[in-house]
Image 1 (spheres, one colour):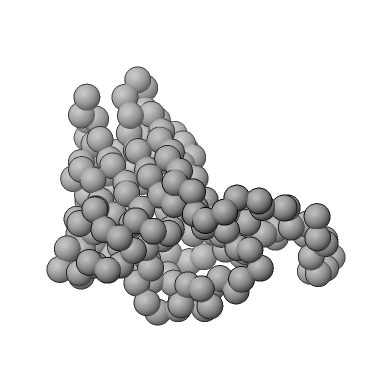
Image 2: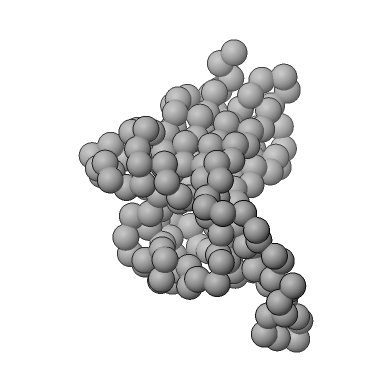
Length: 175
């Protein structure tokens, strides 16, 4: 382990990351006995790189992961930041910026990076404020955390930032 510089009176430790590349990951959450959200993405590592404003440029559309676009399948209609999203499969893109991010649900879910990204395929965009984390997250990671029987916090974190938003079921789940 390598000791990180002291910040805010605490010491952050960087854990050894021996994985190569950006492995694929999948994550899901159920409501009752039904799948609600199924998420598939690739998980790049920090590996000593400058992430925000470096590897991931500010003010440009980013795949919110690595390799193929991150794919989100909702088995029921949902509400996100006051926007309705029908049940279906979408890509989650983002536009990072130092103080506020733009998050984008896009219809074209089968894409490599942003090669085929078109704003014409956006279902909607919304803004989220990133949180600064006290410790480094070595691998880009999504989180699906149930808040109640209808709402899940969807979040992703990498390096020292976390972006989170609520996804609320708006109707019945498809079986």
